[in-house]
Image 1: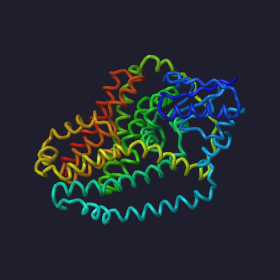
Image 2: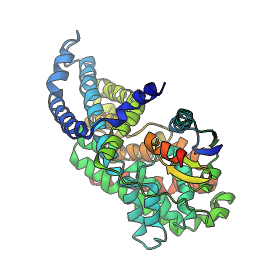
Image 3: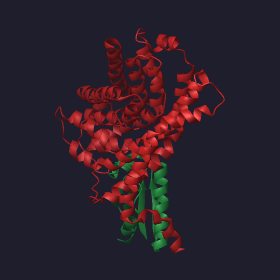
Length: 78
Length: 352
């Protein structure tokens, strides 16, 4: 079970990112829990400056804009 | 199931040559269509059962000419900007600005504010990220003011709709206000008016991301994504703005415009700022209105003040920033930027 966090104040792109993470994980058969972080303070504390941001198992892998599907697969598999 | 998902993402994996052929092709089509706008709009207006030189005819012609023109310009500008901005990121900008306490930190921040991609929904994390990395508050403000104030969309549309002279004036003064207001705010020692938790965060963590290597095609894709996202979001504002512009162009008598927004009425500049701040639209929506105002003889200073306060100062933005700034700091921020806008407005009304 991997913990993935999606950082974003709740804009449309953040929701799309969350959906992409879930879809990619289920397609690859990886068991994940996706946690949404919407509070500005927590987003900043994680070192995210441009949203949406993604962290996998506590490690920040992406910030700013929708993630690339191929890269997302790489982060989830790692 | 697998094939279905892959088909869904197929557009992301077009072969590279399609991009190398498609982008120049799209640019050529853009250029051809742009050149045909006047004949097209005159022809389309003639289809309406109204006299071309009547009020309604003028308004219809303005609308039909401006809608495709603004949408074409917007698409082109957003694409080019999206590609150029792919070389910049908030993380890299922060690294450049960190520790720039010297005087040239301010113009540098203003320039980076124009070039760095960020949306207003992430202005709070961005603000915190900057301040916690030790970037002075004033420099951070220069960055945040310049972003919307001298954004490429506003400048490009001004250039296309009103002409290069006014676009240049706008660029110079917008940039000066962003730099100057940041400098003044920086000198005022306002750190104590940050929300408490932001100040305590000062030694906060800095997120490290691996540097991504992007190919040219990746950057072109970013440009197309930007067009889809931004044009898809602002087209309605564009239509509303052009509608208002068309109504002004067709129906507002020139004497009335001169009385309200002429250079003689000194109060017109502060009034333009007061009206402009609560108006929430974006550059693409306000420039057609500016075009119509100037065409009817509104004074340049008053119009500049109106445009700047609509674009650079917005209430929703202030409400977002309320999370990190105290009301007092927001008020000072507003006052300093508004003072710069007023000065610009009065200056141009006085010298022209």
